[in-house]
Length: 419
Image 1 (cartoon, helix red, strand yellow):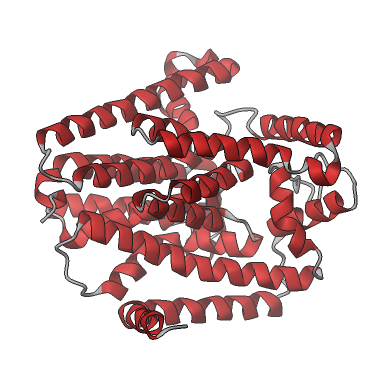
Image 2: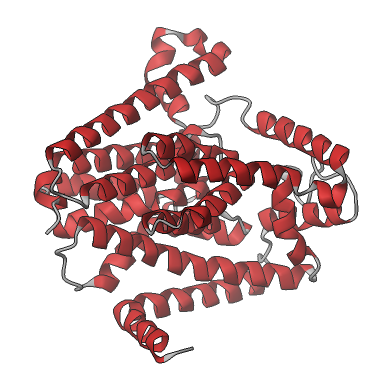
């Protein structure tokens, strides 16, 4: 390690030191408490570990309950190759290693998101109260981070991968970005939502390379299982995904569910029997909103040709917006809302450095409180159950996305103009 790298590490520790040390202490303490209470289960990770073990042993992977009765493997055959090396270790050792990876990436990802938001949207901001801002970003994430660590899911890993892919795109390292995005899509296909954005933004080289990597990723498991077995595994995977997302309205945190419960059921109650058609209509409306936002961005870019950083800012915002939208348009677990970390950082910076009125700041804080409110030990079992069943987290995320779109458009001239 050269002196330049050491100096860079020292600078990072000086800038983010309190945050890094505090969260590291928190994760170590949480690990100890979980083990003392015999709650270091990581049930989601147990599914990945067991499915990879079955794959290596040539056994059935899909449609098998690993651990809990609901513990079915839902990811692609390619993802098994990622989990397979860890399945060669004893389960407890693999769990500890996975926990360490999650802990490190939670800290790293929050800092990365913070840095991207600060440098691209608030370039005039002096580095002050940096640790306070990071803690304020972390605070509403506590319930979802708790769940992520307790279950041993991989959402924070995927968020790290996609933020890293964004940095590669911005650095014009397109094949590296394409590889990262393709891996993310192969693990969870809903990330394919980024392909249209890349095409609209004329990132044709990156989009084409992603497609090539996807084809390669689909074929690679054949090397280990044989071609016919690989085809069957992909069929089983598609069936599993279809079963998991069978009813879009039933997912209490989805936009579909909230629209149906708050409006549509009073106008057209039969929509629940046509939830797939209803889902297509809602997705079309969401696509129109995103298209409207893109047109606003394009118009603004043409009006400010002298601002060379504006396209970069717009693309970053669109990228983070799509990330945050994913858990609202798929039936999924609460910890998937960690994908909204960049937008939460965006709001926190607007609270400190933006031009919002006091009333607007109060509304922003309310949305963040809604997002992070469901801490079982804090609100109690009854209220926690009501918050979960009602889908308050999903509603808060919708509000956060809407707020960020508003801030991005309304306060652009004052807040986002480059020096």
